[in-house]
Length: 173
Image (cartoon, rainbow, N blue to C red):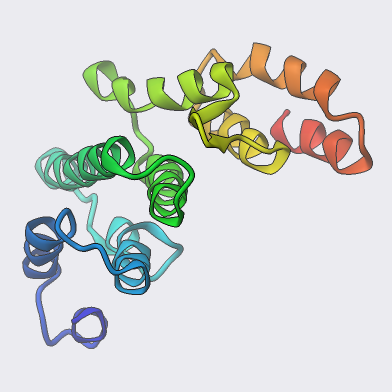
């Protein structure tokens, strides 16, 4: 289906409706990863393709992306702790938050789970955040201009004195 969107054989919004209707029920990791990738991974994704030419179109795009974020959060909560499914939902949630961007007012609530996971050092009991995932949270919040990224950056700077840690500090600043 995504190929059909890219080849202008299926309207983007039709594809978005199909994704929204079926994403939550999908349990096959390979298929779920593939579908989720079409939502927010890079320049060939719904988040990128969806026009932003006026306020109404942006609102419609953001509403769709918010609904997908809700599906990912629900998936995170219902996944077995530490499972590949939980990690897939986490990774795609983080990607979509960054791709969604433009957070204002109520939609900032989608940044709160990132902060909570960072502060706890885990997404769930059996899914601890490693340095890379912690850095990704800091990068995401910083790129979105969230004020909570500053203290998190200071914490990560102290926690990760490696060469890569120093590079991350410079990159986030």
